[in-house]
Amino acid sequence: MPKTLRSNNSHLNHEVAAYDKHPHHRKIVAGTIASVALAGGILAAYNHDDIGDTLDNLTNFTPTPAVNTQGSEMMIKANDALRDFGPWALGLGAATGIAYTAGRKLRPDSRIAAAHDFTHQTRRTHRVLFAGVTMGIIAGAAGIGDAASKGAGEAIEITADMIGADKDATPVINSYAGAPGNYMSVDRQEVESVILEQGGTPIAYSHDLGEVKNPLSEINPSSAPIIAVPNVVIEQSFNVSMPAIDDCNDMSVIVGEQLGVETGGTVTVNDKPATVAGTVPIKPGLDRVVVVGSTDQLIDSGCIFPNKPLTGIAALGLEGKHKQILQELEERFGKTYSSRTFEDLKEENDEFWDRSVKPLQMMLIMDVMALGGIAIGYMQANDIRARRKEIAMIASQGVKKKHIKRANNIATQMDNLAAFGVSIPVAGGLAYIANSSQFGVAQEIDPKIASGYLVVAGVTALSSVLSNRLIEKTNVPGELRSGI
Image 1 (spheres, helix red, strand yellow):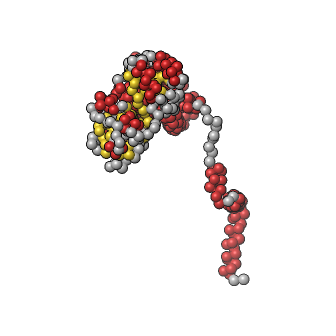
Image 2: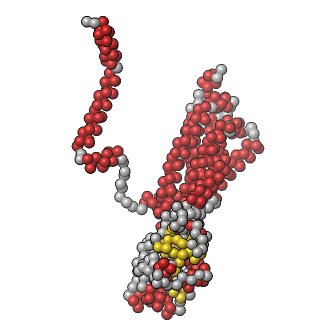
């Protein structure tokens, strides 16, 4: 046999021997072949049209529990609790910090004061910054839900102001129950006749959701709350007239000034052109711009909402006489209507938007809380591990570990107070971006920004359990000997 051939065979034998010495290689190859065969089997078992659905079912996990309101209620209450109790938590934290600082200065020889140098090092800066950013994000998310309901409810308040209603007493006759928008047809002639006979002034109005666009802009709002009130109200409130028209190309409206269209310009409302008769500084938020028009044009002339049921008819001058109006309507026409005040309507509207927005925002808060909790706990644990010799040295000088743990807990909350200062510009910056990019969310930076503090304070309290465990397990003699 030629020499070169023997050499090649020798090399081959060496590779085979090496392969035999590492049986896990064969397992990997066998597993790969099996995986390919399984994939091929799956693809072959189904028709081509079913492959996508089959793979989705194999790779996705989507829980589908029975739909109920408990999840939403829980999320809404949690969101409200953050905003309601955040300032109290911040006040308690500040009081604790003041008491700790004062006590340490009055009694510098105390056991906790002796641990102060250990618990207050510059290496805490990264935790403070991270916690501050986390607080700011949470505060911003907690504020969106309230901004949604306040902004959307502004249309109701504006309507009450325009027609001169008493928000807490003027009856609003309507025919719906539950969430706003579930209204049915109101017989305008019947209701108005009863209000007039009882000495009141009927004002029919409508609230609807539609679209308004600036034709010259590349970016437009996603939707618009459209307020329709009688032309006489428009004339008194804005000093412009919007009477009934025969040609809908002659339609005019008042729009929110943040749309960027000046008086005399043109917008489209539900894709129909309208002249801007004036602008108002109203920011309903959630990527929306308000539109105000007359019932004469939008409803009676059929330009935007032909044959659309009215939201309600306000009974001016009959404040508090809800029962009398409803009773007369039932006796004369055999119809059952509802009566609310504008304040009631706003509360129902707020509840509707709370249920629409707050659960989603609370899910975001929970995601940030989980991520922040893991990161903060990791930072705290690493700090303790890196300073075991310092712990051992302090403990060897007569300071008990329980005092070191207590000082560490207090220092952690002091970090949170410092982080709250960092969170203010973070939350403010996020609100500024939202206000400037979404046609005015109108989110306010108020003391309820402390909702972020409440979450992080709770998270750090839990992560302190781990760091305290590490302090307790510190081997003092071993750490001291290892340093020699």
